[in-house]
Image (cartoon, each protein chain N blue to C red):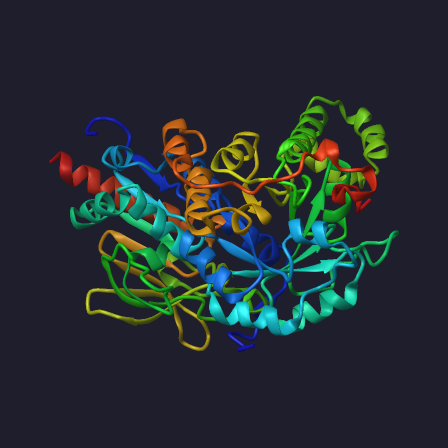
Length: 204
Length: 300
């Protein structure tokens, strides 16, 4: 991997894979869909897309992807999860379906479908100074929220009522909403910077 | 509904189309009770369609097919945490109002039920809940999108277990999109006339080469191979109606169709998923169905 441009995977088991690939490629990344253990060992960073977290979990276990991903996360690979992807990264899930597992890594408790049904899905503007002056236009679709965070977790974004919807912990990032569907590139750019840093530190 | 912010907006086109984007690569299964809904969720369905009778039974029993009992829909909503869809009759905007008030995640304005209006479809734009509609060709798909559909499913022929119509409809839509892509600007005016579709949408398709909403396929999918075929033909995901719960081993078949939909381009995985599933639904050849009994011809 050293010496060539970093390779970024988008976990392509189910969900809005295409939108993430488009944003990553627009930012100049070498982005590709991944869904097999051998493909996961060949990437420098990963995006876990929006989708149905219970389905992504099931398929990840059925095809040996869960262990590969847990190993890479433990090794410090940068991973960014949106919506279902945030759920997959959370150490603890509330309102999961029976037997649902996450990959873990982010020291947070996430509640699935925290807002209700699709009728309660919405879009709104959120100020996130970490990303610059321009507020983030965020789309929440049957979205989760972060109910509590551990010590090492930095809160990047909150709704007006204080609920946490964007977090970061070292190489891991998670958002309840979907920057990939609104033309918001700052989260992916931030993630790609983590990937570049990670590759550089491994090359040293 | 909790107010999250003074500036938050519900029911926008982006929010409605967005849920369908999140269902991509998944399988949506017809279920008629809470038990089936749980089996579907456990098998990896990305959403369930709550209805009283699967299309195969509607076909066998005949009579007028209507929106399901709200009790049944609510029981299914209480059982699973994945999205729940429900069907309204074509043009029956009151059934749609009822389904929205129940809080379903998606409404299918469906030709599988008996149409309530043989001229007009539901004006879907004022609703907060998103709609999926069937289409047999591009013009029909664009008319539905113009009325506010946030997702399209190619119709196929529901309740048959015969995938040939599904194949025909997805191929037709793809071919018509490809034709638009190759046209010059002046030809698009005539194309819009021929497709009986709004000019602006026709131009958008010609430029982007794809529908502005997610395209699933439906109607006759009964095996993992059928699902993989639909995905290879360009579908974003698959609806399975009678194919799961009219088969010998619904739980195993449902899980196998989910796997084949994700790994649609990997024959080894589809082969593995196809093993030992027991009996598929018996099915009816579409060619043996007299024309008045073809559901795909409902809707215009």
